[in-house]
Each structure stands twice: as structure tokens, then as C-alpha cells.
Length: 173
Image 1 (tube, rainbow, N blue to C red):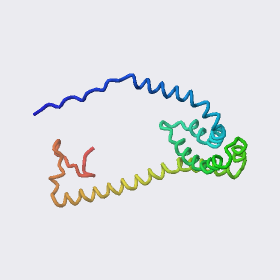
Image 2 (cartoon, rainbow, N blue to C red):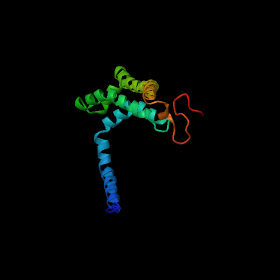
Image 3 (tube, helix red, strand yellow):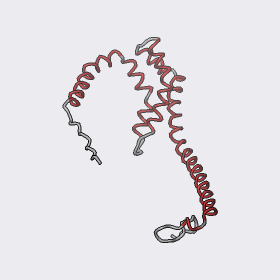
């Protein structure tokens, strides 16, 4: 029998550092012009996506899923108005005009509120559903166990280690 060769380790090259340096230089060169040319967009997004920033700061759970829920629905509420900003007049005046409309803010921040509702309400619903399905599966397994015991007898339920019955409810603890 032939022995398997261990996988070859790929040596770390300096190209990773070089690519990071290129990205950093590219962002430093392109960042200020992008900020200047897209200032209405950045301002609009910052003010419209404030609930997402708040969700990121407020969430103290280990995995921080709240901001993801809020961000998705917040951006869904912001997207139509962002398109309106881009395709009507991409100016600071138009950005503040959209942000100054109470109905538009209700839509944007209301969508973020729905993200909070989903984040708070879905985990208990999913937990209850998993509990119900696991209880159903447990019942199916017990029925199968009873059927096998009636078909094969109590001998098949004996454990090899200590000879005691492994049938549910008869096992000593």
C-alpha cells in the first residue's frame, strides 16, 4: 500500500503585503475625490442609515446580529430615495430636501424599525418551531423503538457494556 504524501505548504509571499499596500494607496488617492464628488450621497446615507449605526453601537450580544437585521431593512427603505437623489438632482440641496420630508423619514426609519421587530420576534418563534419539530421526531423515534422491540424482543435493547436495558423509561440513572 502506498503512503500518502503530506500536503505541500504554500510559503507566504510578500505579495499579500504588496496588495494591501496597493489597496491603501488606492484608497488614499481615490478617497478624497470620491468624497468630494459623492458628498450628497455620503451625507444622505449617513443620515438615513443612522438606525443602523445605533443598532451596531447598542447591540452587545456576542455575534452582533441586530445591526444586520436593521441594516438590511433600513437600506431597503432608503434605496428608493437614494435612486431619487441620483436620478433627479445629485445635490446637497436635494439630499436635505428628501431628508426633510417627514413621510420619507418615516419610510426609511420605519423600515429600520421593522428590522428591530424581526430581530426581536423571530428567535423565539424559531425556537418554538424547533422545539415542536424535535418533540415530534422524538415521538417518531420512540414509536420506531417500540415497533422494533415488539418485532425483535427485549434482547436487542441490551447494552453490551453492562447488560441493562437501554429502553427509554427503563434505564437506571
